[in-house]
Amino acid sequence: MGERLTAQAALDFRRPMQVRKAVRYRSGGVFPLCPRCGAALEREYQGFCDRCGQKLGWRKYNQTLVVST
Ligand SMILES: [Zn+2]
Image 1 (cartoon, rainbow, N blue to C red):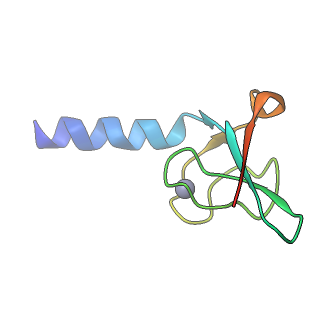
Image 2: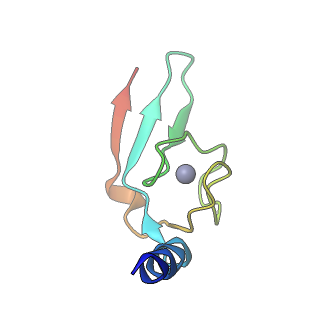
């Protein structure tokens, strides 16, 4: 059972998760947030999260919720 869960988790990482949130810093920059780990992404439309390796999708990015710090 543990092996099946691991395989499923690996599949989830290959399937893109849509980016739906971004954060606006007081300095003025807006950074998209990884939907899996919540890390701020350096670039829009990058293929994978630098921190957790999640594959990212950008189809919903034009409806992104921007939160301010
Ligand atoms: Zn991530």
